[in-house]
Length: 178
Image 1 (cartoon, rainbow, N blue to C red):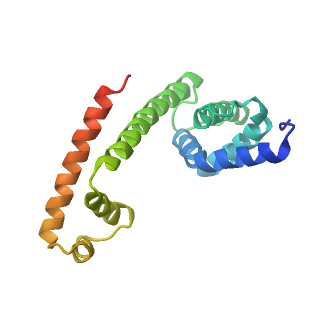
Image 2 (cartoon, rainbow, N blue to C red; image 1 turned 60 degrees about the vertical axis):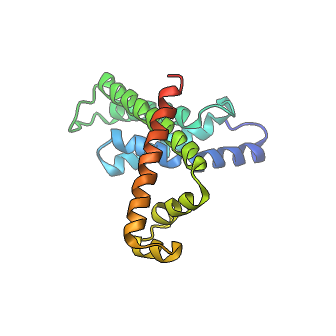
């Protein structure tokens, strides 16, 4: 049953789902080989998430909550369909894989946070170069033209920036509590 304040609750649910849908989808698709089965499970997962949204505590990790529901949907689907997947349908096996995916995701999230922090520390001109190359997908010659540098200078600058970011990220992750 959806929460009582339906308008606000619907908006919260849709915003959180929109922010986390790719992560939940990647999670399901990594555990279910058949694309059609994965899509069916995702639909069931979204429906269950909506029905149980009144139990979700705003401010907590929606992605983790959604993946827990997705894992239960996968296990239920395997039991009810009695399918013979390419890999073991043993619930312990699926849960072990799910835990490894969660562990990898936490590591990637920490790296992403560290990268955001380190990018903010770059001088504006270096941040602009990174944005041109990796977010606007411009090639080296276009960046050279925009920044009034030679292509060789852009290559060297990007190399120094990557090394600087790598050092910063490594330091940030090693100083973070585990």
